Length: 158
Image (cartoon, rainbow, N blue to C red):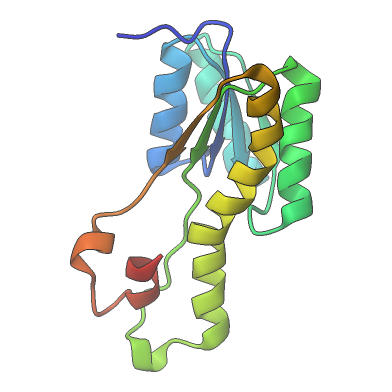
């Protein structure tokens, strides 16, 4: 459907679920893929999955709530492949509790992972996009943002 040969994509949370599906789709279109996630074992498995499909991929261990770590993720991508064309902001977590049981630190942990990380990753990718004169950012969301859920108020908000 489209050709991404020669392009490089970072997928946060690319080591499982929707993120791995996005990584597979980008790789199938010819992109080289950076699997970015906290769980190094899952990321290694995702890279092996992608390589088994003929894709070029590598993993970067990153906490997307840490601005410095996000900067290092982009730097590692540029050092490895000299470019960045696509950023998929997919990383996300959920804490399933009704609002009256949710602690403030849990609220912040979910918002920082699901929302603030998209800002941090986009900000870190911007210089590479600006230099190249192009770049694409894909932000993944949830249907819960439309419908909400009493058991996941912070997830719905983020």
